[in-house]
Image (cartoon, rainbow, N blue to C red; front, side, top):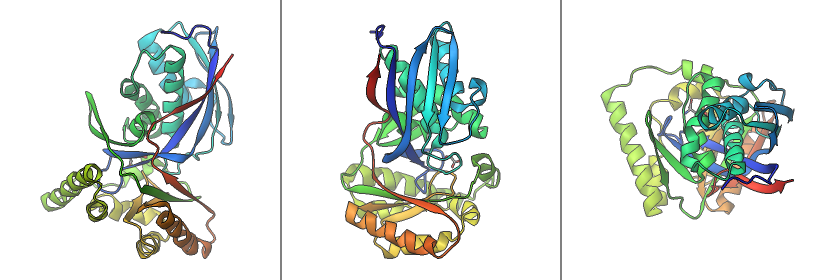
Length: 315
Ligand code: HSE
């Protein structure tokens, strides 16, 4: 039922890792310790009105902002007479590869849905949030917005019509992410990709995706480790990421199950069994980048089992 007396909501919109090595545009996971804070409030004025963005220099005009576009897509389908104000505390830097645009788009549609009394499931909200991705990079990919809305691991089997599966998360699986502070635009990182792959490469890639999915169900960390291989995208995109091969070696030496490019980069992620190893991997990443003049952030995070979290009702 619509929460008519509720004027607004404060929420946490988590970051995410898309692709997860072998699953380009298909696999994604939701992170617990990194994300944006947003407040969504009802407005008497129809439409989406972005009142403030702290932390990043992004357009306030709704049609030029991923949050605005996603919110407008939801209103268009639901009731264009309604109006909402959005303020965003942006902790995820756009162009970092950990789902910055997805967090803004998913946070907006989840917040509006919450105030409307949840007429849509998290899965049903994905197409609206995908419109934000279309604005951000020209392609309405769903591998960041799906885990950001649904939590955990997700697999996008198709986008038209949308078919998304929730996958289980092995209990001890922990992510380490380094964000080298250089910008790699998703549109550019997509433009460099080859449009064709050989049958032999495709066979290896879908074998790895299938095995990775199986490893999540079986909690088989060794199989997961063997499956975290990307034959198609990583060899090309890694050229855009300084010290990529050194990072990969350092992660593996520190005990990570595997590592790869987070989304379209430049962030690099590693997955480990347990927090202790994930912290060792963080130190190993630090050792590599401390020797460079590139500023960076490192995060260690469990996989967040639920997506956008509602923190406080606002009167
Ligand atoms: N699957 C998308 C890509 C994710 O790799 O281009 C972008 O974050």
